Length: 204
Image (tube, rainbow, N blue to C red; front, top):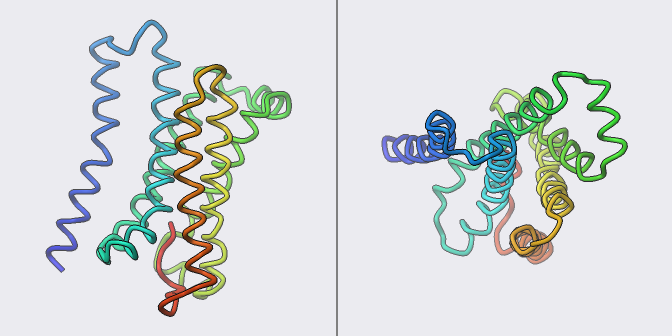
């Protein structure tokens, strides 16, 4: 139990390091000529990274036999939601000045905003139902079906990133290939299972 708690603590601290570095860059005025753009891109990238890590837990656990990774999957998912919330807040606060009507119009007019908003809205019910009490309330199978939305969330996140980048698409395409591999592995594991699936293992 002590080892698991220490492992979770290490992951928790390291997941906050990017935020600390971001705040330090802002404090030192080292966020480039456009700090708003820097914060928006950084929080968006961190959201996609943690979403990808969340989806990667099961393949990594099965391939390398590191079962302890399951213990931090929920935390990784919540950090994806945390950084996604910061990403959205930055956009609504500094770009739209909390004008929700303007946000709605932006979603309709700009497809990449729609993709990003879709990813966030898909993460929202996963974050809300991430507790053990919600697993019991919803039931294992229903809860697992709900949390399969994480796959759609990461796909929408990659699409958002790809549509946002206008010239060099190598990074979003790299994320796309990684996510494609992870989802392909999940499909393979589903239709050719070697062990019974645990429906209450946390996806998010």
